[in-house]
Amino acid sequence: MKRLSIIALVMLTSCVPKQQSANVNVNSHLESRIEVLELKQSEILKELKGIEEKLNKLKEEIPKLRVSIDNIRQDLSKVEEKFPLIEKSIKETKSYALKLNQNSEQNTEKKLLKLKEEISLQFDSVSKEISTIKKEINASKEDERQKLKELEEKIREIEERLSNLRIPSIKIEEVKPEK
Image 1 (cartoon, rainbow, N blue to C red):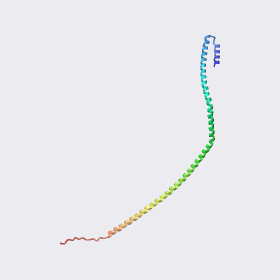
Image 2: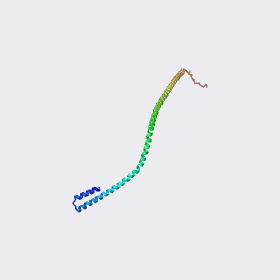
Image 3: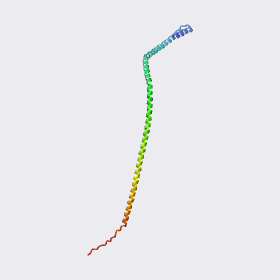
Image 4: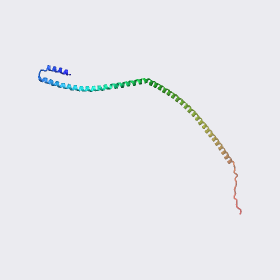
């Protein structure tokens, strides 16, 4: 930057007539420009120091990160070693679960069939009992009707006998007392 400023100064001085006031203006302009550039340079140096500090901190953390990465790689290799075993275990568990599911379905179907058979047998038994009770009730009704008919017949016979019975009429005369 300084070289460019100096070159610009040299070119300016060669183009401008050699007057002292022009030189003073150019010099003051160049000095102010140099001051601005020096300020920018100091800011850049401060930023550079901040960046260098961050870089040093990062450099300090690099060994820690390498150790962490190595630990992660070891853990990953352990997991990768165990992965086939875990995968095999998952497959075995899955097949075992499928077998259990099939067995439970078969057992459930068998139990359902047994329950259906038991219910059917109980239904048949209850149906037979109901029909037997109905027959007994009908027979009992028939017996009651028969007995009722017999009783009605006996009542008729008794009524006929009563009607056929003649009660002799007795004449009651008044007896007069003797005097």
